[in-house]
Length: 331
Length: 291
Image 1: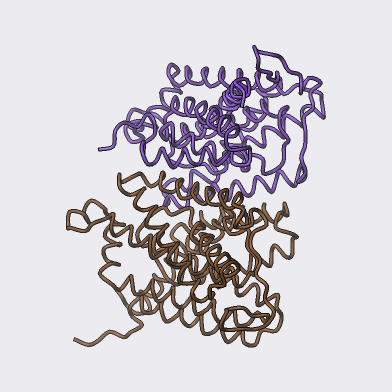
Image 2: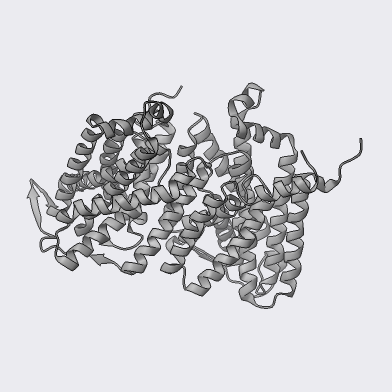
């Protein structure tokens, strides 16, 4: 039996292409001049990382994780508060942010999965919870209420993850994206990944084979949550300013899910390229048409969202996968 | 805290609850029939408010007269939206359907801002702030009328669901779409009517509260959508009577909660109810025991 080429495997191919994206973006960022474009690039990479992390729970495990921003916001606040109030090193905050978000994800899974609740309840619960967190932080004196948290950055300092220059943020964001891609890849390669696929395709059959569906879903939630917490903590360092309406915004939440849904929830290239394409497009459109709340922008964005999802119900990656299958003669 | 104050918040909560009920019963009906959570539902309420304001400022038409017209117009718009973007997605994954209704909501907010601008608009009836006393409690006429009409319409709609052929078809489609189709019911038509009527009722609620609130493009999203979701879950998703009772309960909970925790945390009350319901009554008040 001859060994099949490494790239003939769809998952390997995706990993190579996704890492290729990370390297190319890093090189492009190294030469990029203006702060405006660097800002757009960093945000696109953050969205790509969020989308790829979301697709572990929202795609691989099939959970209707509609309110994903809670974990991001919690991570951002963990970093903002620990760094400004207690001087905790931001690199450590990335880990603590991930841990706190993971704990929240575990709690949500514990509460919602124990009765095998319908997916719709789960979706609405996660959305409502993100708003509960927003209201709590809006009324919490210690966390600065509606004004939020400011970080002051005076000089480039790798040790405290603060830079005046925008470039280092891009490289760190890309490193985070690479980590998320790696985790997603490793899960799909592992026994855990096969459990998730079995539960997603047919929960009853999976349980009949001895797979603990709740445990598999909880695991997916914890991993997705932890990664989002880490990205949120990084976002706080990057933005140097967070407030509840920003880091728990439902609009942002849905924007982050758009990449994986239009790109393909079950793939790696889908969320990565979905966000890499959509987020800059959106930022440029917004810059061209006017501010955040510009009416024309909202109309066009809403229309594109609906038409895009109707035209690509399985995401763009489905077409790439079909092409890949033909290219390498996969069955 | 005096007894009058408690009674006042309680009654205001009931009045608000009636309007909530009317908004939520359309949402729950759409979910029951199509299994679609309509994230754009509150935008139809906002649209109803704007149309009522437009009718008043342009032609001096009272919102209570305009209500029927608004119901019909918005209902048709809702049905059109269902046909164009919801119907083609009914066989797609749920996350897609949800994001489509979110796209619809975004687009409607943008369109309303394009037409009416981002600033607050008011419908100032000559007697907008007129009040009457009920024992020790002072209530405005507009809020009382809104409550009474909302309850009346919700009740009428319940009769419609219970006794008319179309209503029975809607209930059949919500209980078992496949069986309903076998009985010769056009489920596609039922879907269309349900979405139209559901969104029309939200708009009707909007006209009723128009004299009591400010309208701006995100009014519905800011003040109604989360409460409506909580109500629908509390009253068991898809259960019409559950939504009516849930609406009143959440109205009261928010009224009294606002008094106890302060108005800033008013919305937190209904969200906490959500969490508690999920913990202890995961299928809502009318969903039966979880086995």
